Length: 53
Image 1 (tube, rainbow, N blue to C red):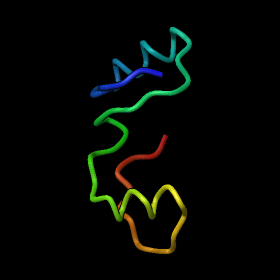
Image 2: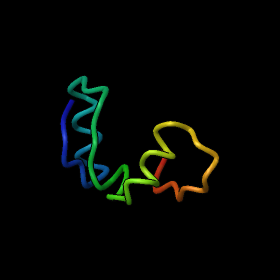
Image 3: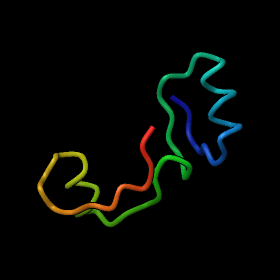
């Protein structure tokens, strides 16, 4: 896993190098704890999705 992905170019390079797990602002912005828990645990709360790949 690698972190701090901020651009599509960075993501492309890491995928080309074989990374399958990444995180960073490109994929999702920081969010309140309750929203993160809803996203992780699949609760039916409305959570704004920042990006999907």
